[in-house]
Image (cartoon, rainbow, N blue to C red):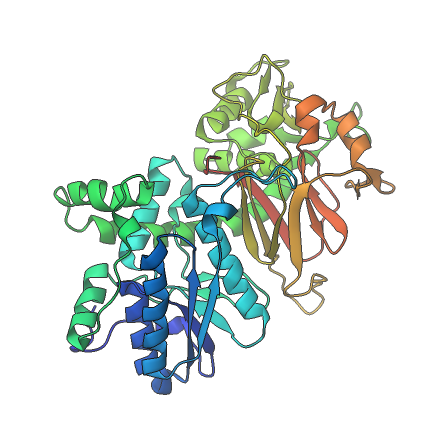
Amino acid sequence: MMRGKSQLTIDTRLLKPGLRIAVGLSGGADSVALLRALSARSAELGLVVHAAHLHHGLRGEEADGDLAFSREIAAALGLPFHQARVDVAKEALADPSNGKAAETLEEAARRVRYAWFRQLLATGELDAVATAHTLDDQAETVLAKLLRGAWTEGLAGISPKLESSKSGPILRPLLKTTRAEVEAYLRVLGQPWREDSSNRHLTFTRNRIRHELLPLLDEWNPRLREHLAHMAVLAADEEAWWDVELSRVAPQILLLGRAVRGGGRSTGSDLSIGIDVTRLAAFAPALQRRLLRYAAAQMGAAPDFEATEALRELALTGRAGRRLELAQGLHAERTPREIRLKVGPVSRFADASLTAAKTEGAPGEHKSCIPCEIDAPEFGIVLKVAFETVAGANAVQRTPAGASVTLRNWKPGDRVRLRHSSGPRKVKEVLERLKVTGSSRSIWPVLEMEGRIIWMQGVVLEPEPGLVVQARQSSRNQA
């Protein structure tokens, strides 16, 4: 992985000549190495390199030292330096006035850090921001997701390129480089770095994985970190393939509304999705699961493994008339020919093992630029919003690049356009038709873009040309 004695391997496929890129510089070994490597090769690669340091307001004088150290490195290399200060401890607190739920320090730090990166990109002074995530970070992330029971999309781990802003992406050029190689590179240069004392605190899950679990597993397989990183690449590629396959198969098998006598379907007042169980049974189990989760996602729900298997059992072996209530108010009913999914109120008789607990209080808003992935644990979902793949000279993509979306709780006056509906309907009326009442009704997510709602949990809306919105269950727990 090392090139000669004084070069660090970086993924140059992520970089293009003329790119104005800021390295997120903490002062730690990884970010210092990335800054030195990009600075040393800036002329060769045609880069304009900046340094960016965010003071998190934690660790007192130690953090002040990190800022001074980072500023000195940037000055020594003759690089522009950006800095800001935030109070992460305050940011992590719950704020009932705007419905913000409490976060862990790790969650809050990551959120404000990436928000600051987006602010830097929005100024137009930069084209991209680079973070120094390494192969070790990737391995730790995949293992953490595996421990939480993530699906394949979670095992994809850290993406090499995160499209987080209309002004530019977040890049990870060191994902194929180990932490040991980073430190060896810095020693060759004689370049010191800062050690963050909080990285030794075993109260943080990632630190326990890094300092306790992975070293133990290394004794069983010294190449485990490499294998976990490979798993991330495989999972990411397979998820991309599944996205295309589901966009092809799902429209052929998912049916809106309830079947009526004489053929056809009623969609006027029945906000549900039906799946022909005979056709579903003909597919392989892997595709069955994907289709059931895809259908649930259209209703704004994200069933976990147990819930998905319960849906499969109901579809393949269940008797007509049998019903099931799952997480996030997702209801399933077996008819003679179909399994029908809809979202309704969570009953007190729901199976506790299959029903997700609701977070008290009104959730906050999550705003991001398309394409994006919004993790909203207070709603219990992760929304993925992406541009639809279009082809041909007559393809229509009305959504402009860089458009932003906001995932939020519904509010009085909101209106939606249901698929096959004659006109817009009030969200309040839709929830009444779904028989959603009480606490379930007070917390109901919608996705807004340019003043209109393009997605709502529990119903199928008129599609937004050029956009694909998918939901899955959030793997994060609220503090």
